[in-house]
Length: 275
Image (tube, rainbow, N blue to C red; front, side, top):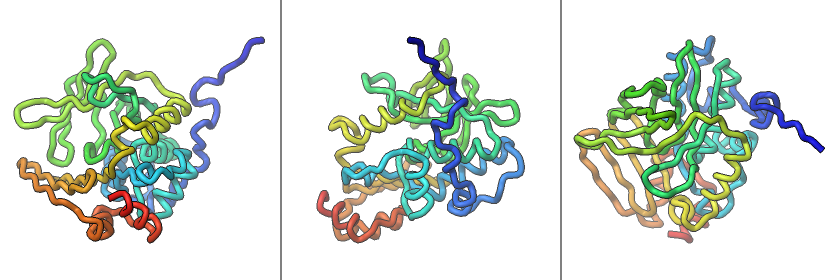
């Protein structure tokens, strides 16, 4: 017996119809997009990063509800919550497609010199004939899309990032002092929904995942990166100045609210129990 597999784009495996563009634009404070231009893509990315935090609190609490767009809508658009890469990119990719952009969903290996899995979801988006690496879900990392071009350098909120290509393998690097630190590597093979379900399962449950054992909340704005990792809040400026503060359980609610994450009383109590 033979089976027929539908090519990417022929079925609604991404549940695009559940994408609430109006609610998304309201949450991010972005005006409606008249045409899928490069300028609009840039402003959409910045509005998203400014409005919706990166956070893994549901993973830490062992109660992540999944990465379907309907679930993500309720969390990221219906509450003052954020998510990690799959949630951000599932939402953003659907929004972009409904606004008329061509989107390819990809997956990257973070710190590719280490023997870790491909777990990071990102997008390549076509606008006005140019492909752009578009990644609003890499924590306190990227504020703007980057032309998918070997050697392209883009300032990301005050930190330069560079793309390099070698025989079909792309790397994204960040300038740290006089050096370039490789953040992740990827190819341009478009992925299916099940690939992210598998990666999400590993990332949200495996004991070696960096997200299962500690809170990670990140915010990025021009010139300032803020990161709550475990019980340490780090504020980094573009001049290299860094301050780190220990956060107590009593300070947790105010700290999270300052990062744009508002928990219910029950969620806050459960998270404090892990502190």
